[in-house]
Amino acid sequence: MVTIEIKENSKQAKAFIALAKTLSFVRFKDAEKTKTPNSETKKAFSDTDKGVDLTSTKSHEDLLEKLYS
Image (tube, rainbow, N blue to C red; front, top):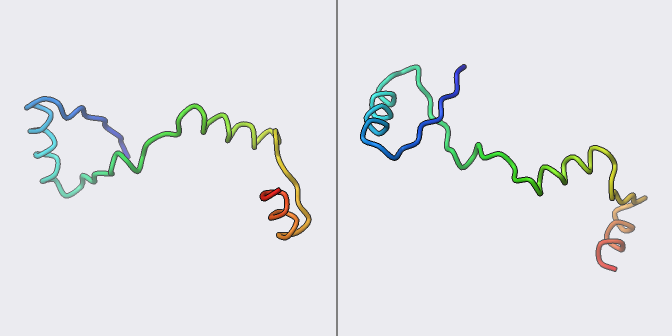
């Protein structure tokens, strides 16, 4: 599979996209669904992978108590 990013801001780009849509082997993905996480989210992922600022609980009641206190 090959990924191609096309800026849709020109006549040529729009024509290329229209042509590509006619081809049976071309599939389009919604750009909104494939967005990459922002830097804050990436940092949160990294921190949790490293075990930074994690909260441990023994039960769901304990979790709720920690969340709401």
